[in-house]
Image 1 (cartoon, rainbow, N blue to C red):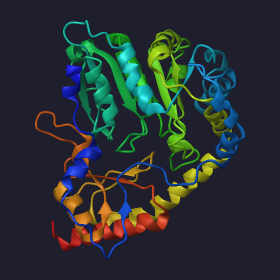
Image 2: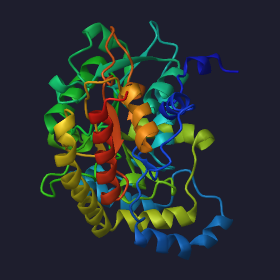
Image 3: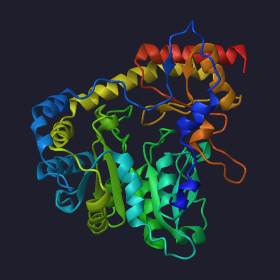
Image 4: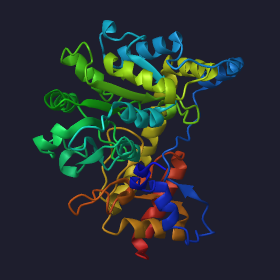
Length: 402
């Protein structure tokens, strides 16, 4: 077997399963889970209708690059959403549909990293962050470079932490805005700083923007990497690659539909790689995706539901932990004055509530794990369920039965 597999760490939910393997949940409480970030809102109706209407498409092999209608729908959405000049986005060269962002984020590193480099190349990534970035780096033959996401940096990956020598070894920088698990949103200046570093040290930026359509203020949507490229006149989108998905935006995690967009030269090689490895989208999935990307009404309704949950949860959560309302995504990243693993066990044992210890989403660097003492709470249940979950968590903290 590939010896690089030995470097992979257990996934957070595997660690969680081990932690609570011998825990008996309180049978007097109905189960509530805020552990997995799987949207529970209704899937976009327009996508469901299109999916059913195009089921005959399963009789045909889909092309690697998707059909022109899907690429055009994505192109139109990108241009309108991020104020990118229309002439900068060619659906034939700058857009590549993908089976969700997870597989695309992972496979991108396999295509991009040159593991012949000496010393060993590095892939920079937020810490805490989505574990796919780390696994992608390790299996591509690179070393992860963990960028701390701390309160003093607004929970954004600290671009000032690495030395110039560290940046010189970086071939790929993963960013995530809005962030998982922090909900932090990068502004345009942050993206511009990342672009300046990429130019100076010769690396590509992979910007994971799958939570970009979940935010509290309708007048202030989170910016993106291509928007920063547009503001700086980077008309070739060089070094810029963004990843978007319908999983969170349209509540379609099982559809497995997203896209990659940006630097045409980089994408040309990525397409060549995906000719062999990439998962393509069937015609019915493409039809559903087109319908979803061309409709914003269901996305606004989705934001309304999350806004309602945050409004209900925050006043109940704030009295017993250190927590801030995030600028995007659907997570909370509260800090407690108790051990996060012990709190997780007590929540399940006493209240039949599942949460994720913050340390499982981060790596210890120089003796510091930025997730220690925190929980990730996914506000994916309905409003009543989220409120009940927080009230249960409050009882656990007050009881001090950890």
